[in-house]
Length: 293
Image (cartoon, helix red, strand yellow):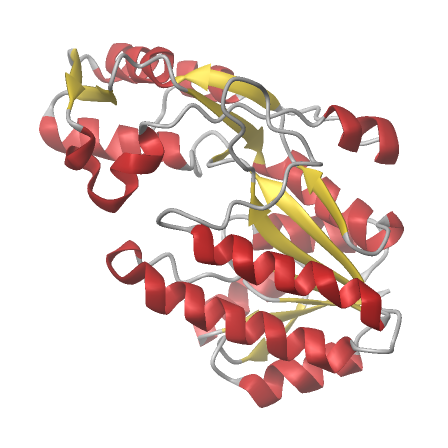
């Protein structure tokens, strides 16, 4: 297949491009700059210059390919409302181009919260809280399954990681510890965070383009839930700094999310699609050290 990928030069998108190309697919990757275009090309794709606001480019690229994967997000946590609105319009534009085509359209989403138990693929999208708008955007795309679009939401944990490269939310803990000299955690630290290696996540995006059923949500979860305290403790050991409880407000808009217990399972995803994570866990990557400066 020929696959259109937004966010193709990003930390997840670049390995999705590599995964698709390694399995015989051609990739058309959206790139905002010449530097991003070079990353897309290095991963084996063909770059098309444009951003999420270039709606005509999104439309033409989606129509010119056999499937689409949406990964791009501004990650501007200082103005989440604007970022979520921009993402929603871009997703709607691609979705509209695919109506009545039967083409696959996989989007990135997040694992949800289910108090007192592991969140599953059957749990509804989270539509409240600081990033609730992203859940609303995702559900709107899944609903296009009724208009002959093979939609799928790949729900990623907050920590998508690979040693040397990225650690997701755990990376925020690392950066904060490097800056403050304290490895911080919120509350009693018992709240659990799921995680996935970015290359395992990439393989699930590929599988859903190939095998996904319309309106499906899958959980890209490798580790069901590491406690925030255990992660902070490992980070403190690696950096040689003390581990300390801090108010949730220390982490700004993300503090509320950091304080939540949010474990998740991918049992149904594994059983249904034969997906099996094979790369190191978040804990293993953290214990290996070598954090980015």
